[in-house]
Length: 355
Image (cartoon, rainbow, N blue to C red; front, side, top):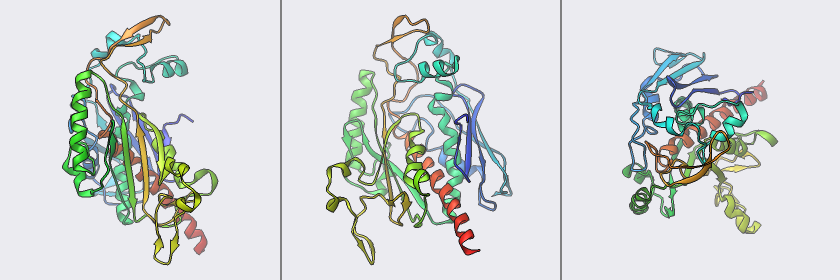
């Protein structure tokens, strides 16, 4: 009941704090004989490591993955997999001056109210550092997806006021913001420079797509595929909204516009985002995630201290300007986990049908 676990058959438990000794994950339920080694995990972890874009913090972590259990001769054994990443560059002293202040936009005040104690070193468990475990688990899930020819990828749809209008998958890895639109990436760079000078931060939108997802994934009513995707993505600290397919735009459409016509060759459009009645329909799954601006900003803000006294706070130190693009792979990892879990659940159902 602690809220640190996710999934039914493919279940993960993340652990660790931003300035603790290490962070990581335990994965239970991974099928055996899946090709896996530390290099596979590392490849995905490197995508969330700081330093790749001008939006990123200057904290330098190698995020070196160590698989401590569940893998033998580069294959999963079917037993719990534990992956650990040590924290090497935590500088807790930078937070001492604001240890008694509640940072606006952070979980300081809510953690204190809930537990009566909080780790003020970088946000503790509420830090984005917790997502290391999610990404490591997402890499393992992706190894399972690869065995089933399922392709999941992410890209930046918007950063601040700049929206990517075009889509070119080949462009994603050709710019530091991971946009699928190179012209938009140039505009994003200009906006980041301006906001950085102001001491402020930016939010944005991440889009995740999943290709070759088989029909039939998702459970009726409460464990719908889209419901579990929304929960998975909303569980990421900086995420404030999720839409699937046409999403909020569907509210503006008429039924005749929003319905996806069905032809012998498949669906003529994809406003449903690949999911109907909570069950995958075989079309491309499209999910967009609204990411809030980083709350740690240099601009002075009003707050209170632990004694409920009014105070002013200006947060200095090593902070991202935006969670994008580092959060992109975190969103992708959570989609991986949901699809793998439902894929395994569907296989159980099929085995029962075949008996």
